Length: 90
Image (cartoon, rainbow, N blue to C red; front, side, top):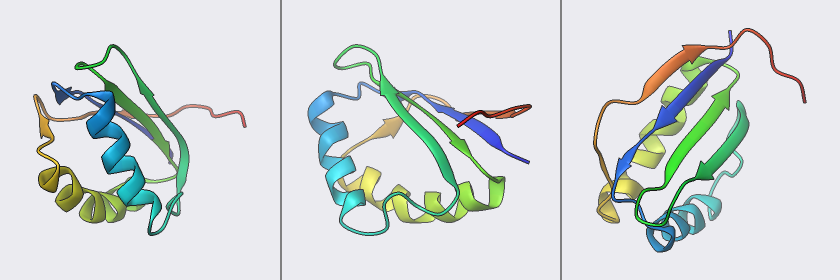
């Protein structure tokens, strides 16, 4: 079952998002199972939402992402929100 995840990193700027994004694109981007990735909001308060084909694929990618976030000082202000997806249209 597909899953939607919403992240609310603390004080995420466009500059930091772009650094993390560039690093992730050096390897396996887009990762297996990623259906949609969206970064949105004001500079200094960016948020990220993603749709994944499965929770397992999200977790596998998170293992690669976590160290890159830590290297760039990205801290989550709260645990991500997870929602089961009823329908996705591509």
